Length: 67
Image 1 (cartoon, rainbow, N blue to C red):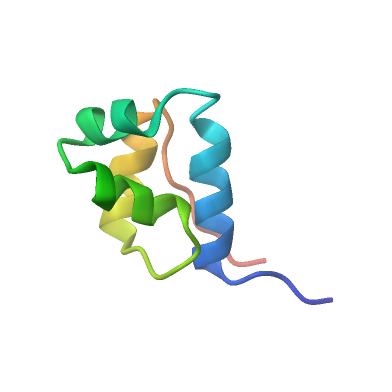
Image 2: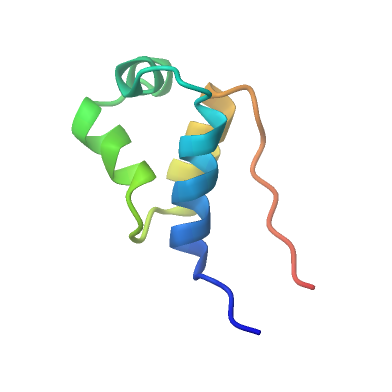
């Protein structure tokens, strides 16, 4: 079974966790620019720190596990 890489998974989860809130609201909550927040919801290579900040801004926490 193949799974998408962590960047794709994170982008989908961050976008889903926004629950319809504008991206600009996420950017403000993170203390970052709109383009920087936009990069988090596009599959790519966000850093763990960026993902933790985005999760915290959404009232969530980042959990990484090996299964």
